[in-house]
Length: 148
Image (cartoon, rainbow, N blue to C red):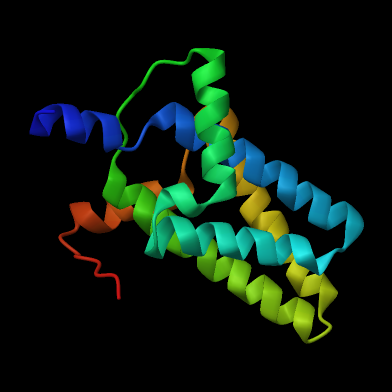
């Protein structure tokens, strides 16, 4: 396999990112309706696996890959660095929501998950990623972001 084929096969796909966002919205709706903390743990696990380990260890990523394949959506390249920044922002919101949940501040946890849900709904339906736009704004002003 040539290097260009490898990059094309393993690059981030817009349709898969949108499908992943839709699945995240479904899980966040389950949390909001059931108040089950285990759902937050599943979401945090998914983000941690996708960002810091391998995406193929994330169950939601695997489901979104399967759904994109069976629906026959074509691959469209996406800006990986912007999506990575957005994933870090999402993980931060989820950690804050989990912390608020564990401290008994359900209202704050619901607000944080609600904000993340609105963001992911916009990403899934309109292909608008707020954190990606913020990343592009920072990049246009020559502000370089580094991840730990």
